[in-house]
Amino acid sequence: MVHPDKVGIEAEKKEDENFKFRSFLKGHADEEELDKQFLRLHKELFADYDCSKCRNCCKMYKGSIPKEDVEKDAEYLGITVEQFIDFFLEKEEFGIGYHTKHKPCDFLQEDGNCKLGDCKPDSCKKYPYTDQPERLCSLLGMLDTISICPVAFEIFERLKKEYGFKRR
Image (tube, rainbow, N blue to C red; front, side, top):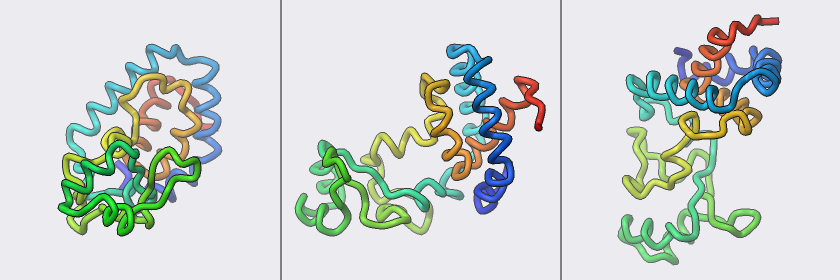
């Protein structure tokens, strides 16, 4: 598997190929079968992968905190809601929640764990979404994801082999 520090470079080298593969899947893949393939590869690759050794997702994105999680998260950290918002958060552009003020995520600790522990937002828990349904509809977003997550990159590479996709 590609090293976390190299995944962006490797994805950039394959940018045209990956876009072509995405188009190929849009025209040739069965949605249910593709979901099964993504789920199988997700389980297989994440079984032996320690995300705390990478955390590119935490380093390259701001964390997203839904409004309904703010009180629980503040309590978990032992601070008031006002302190939590003031120290860590900014309103999202469309006002539906918050995101952390900085990249890397303000909750990323040096050991690769999240300061929010079990209160970590669902969006973080589910990243890179390769085990979620309706992958066929989200292949464009997957192109961004494979430049950040080594496992997502590897899933895409394995799918190319499974589909007999010829590198052009």
